[in-house]
Length: 263
Ligand SMILES: Nc1ncnc2c1ncn2[C@@H]1O[C@H](COP(=O)(O)OP(=O)(O)OP(=O)(O)O)[C@@H](O)[C@H]1O
Image 1 (cartoon, helix red, strand yellow):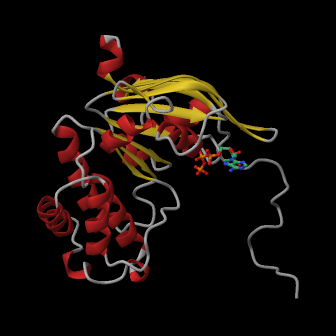
Image 2 (spheres, rainbow, N blue to C red):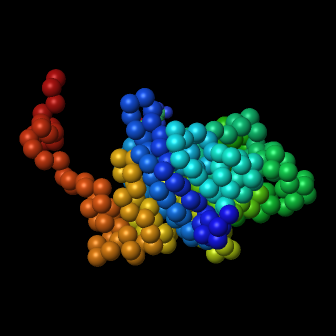
């Protein structure tokens, strides 16, 4: 293992994935430094979820290698899974457990002693403002509460690298602030957070390192200031990088607006 491999939280080389004739990820190279708050941004269908799924060992690549915390995800999955936490897209939880039971179960799966699981679960439930709902079944949780209990489960074993797919989607501003606080504290301790998002303002305010993806390829990666360059905002830099046209042109939407519905 080289020093550079140890320094990087994630190292992706020549990673490919196709679904039938659709190439979702087209030979990407990605090096994500450790101890950073990293945003993976890109338009719908860019390949972010497919990339994160391959990086976290949930989806087998067609080709290429992924190292997380110095270990090969596909050659050494147990080593990698012990070091990462994942909040995947379309999070599926054990619905018939209470939030507290879900954390107890997750903790035991992670091999933590019962008393330690109790201590950590109580602290996470408290910080994430879920203590009052800890005995409610997960099936009865709101979207935001599900994200928060999923985050608590992903953090319970104190991972080195935390992967979050759209962690703020469906989360109210107060809960978003709480999640932010927890994640900022986590990265300050030297851990790495990698999250995908469409919300540029959020990525700009949270992340110090950004990777921009479009059409299965990485268009830019580096410190936030470098990726932004001379642009006034990350949003502006992003639109330029992905070649978005802005407002719809032509007359095809002439019929839209001003009432006049067919009766
Ligand atoms: N299981 C699958 N079967 C077929 N096509 C898929 C599958 N998963 C992803 N794709 C396709 O791969 C491409 C990349 O999808 P992906 O979900 O990785 O994008 P994304 O950047 O996460 O998008 P979004 O921001 O909309 O969630 C899309 O064209 C999508 O339709």
